[in-house]
Length: 82
Image 1 (cartoon, rainbow, N blue to C red):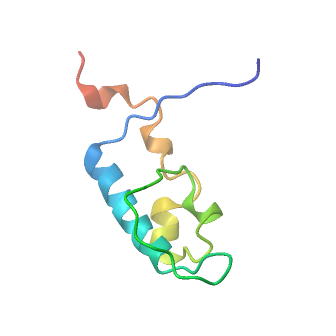
Image 2 (cartoon, rainbow, N blue to C red; image 1 turned 60 degrees about the horizontal axis):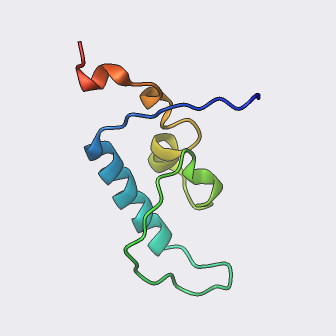
Image 3 (cartoon, rainbow, N blue to C red; image 1 turned 180 degrees about the horizontal axis):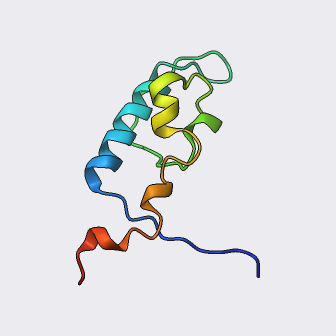
């Protein structure tokens, strides 16, 4: 009963930029076995990339680390439904 569902309404340009930049970081990171990642069509939109991409630092950590999607939580005003 303690689980709360939130909706994140994120502009497509923000999603595209995040996926592009984080895929670039992932492609330049070795796998757990020390193998270079292969290019795929799969992308993951995560609320905190620093948990999976340990090399995230500086501006990328600020832009896509913990809490980066919070401004988009329940962001209904962006839809201009009034």
